[in-house]
Image 1 (cartoon, protein in one colour):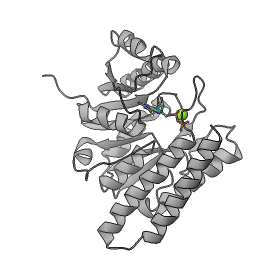
Image 2: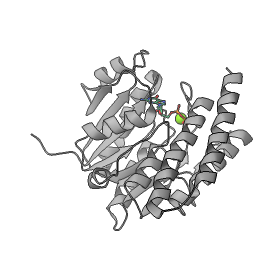
Image 3: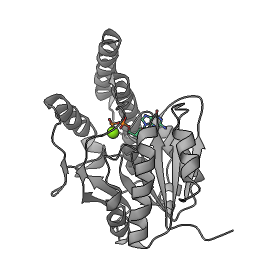
Length: 264
Ligand SMILES: Nc1nc2c(ncn2[C@@H]2O[C@H](COP(=O)(O)OP(=O)(O)O)[C@@H](O)[C@H]2O)c(=O)[nH]1
Ligand SMILES: [Mg+2]
């Protein structure tokens, strides 16, 4: 068997046919420039929009492979499937919609090499990072509240919600049992892999140019369920009583679900 690549780049996809070609071309160009080997794993949740055919076509020219999932559609579970099948010494996760600049991949990998770093985030909120124009008040507030809710779990990390991150294979392999649901797989890994040295590399988070976001109220309710699981483990670890926090979270989940039902 040949040598493992420097990095496995794991990209969860749901209906990203329009983005997958430019993504793979830009990732491959960035890696070639940096002189590192990679494999790109596109983990698709039965999109049925031609994403699978696009990946198969790209596989003639680039080190890219499709992992096709059927059944329960879930971003975090798709990422974990990619990580389990990955062969790289390092694992890097990014979105398919080109919000995360592929040209920054080498910087994330370089930061990961510097001890004692065990987790690197491509960060919108650390000094030097930014989001492109056009984020409305609701989206900003939403991101701020979501980040504030997990603050006790991650300390000073400014962008724990990010979907652009890297870690070493050994860090992933030392994880406590993983139990994510929804979008925040980076947060799950920081907590369950007990990452104490999180570095943030500033990025400019671009607006999605093609296709649609799949983030909806249902996903936001799932985030609260996910937080409940993380806080329960955290409290167990510290012997704390967090019943009041969990009760507040259950109430918040009920409200978000009711809003989600009423908005169809
Ligand atoms: N495999 C898989 N990927 C998903 C799912 N939902 C979203 N994604 C992918 O996850 C990434 C982030 O999703 P996106 O809709 O852009 O969320 P946003 O950036 O928060 O608006 C994109 O690459 C999506 O295609 C899912 O259920 N399964
Ligand atoms: Mg997006």
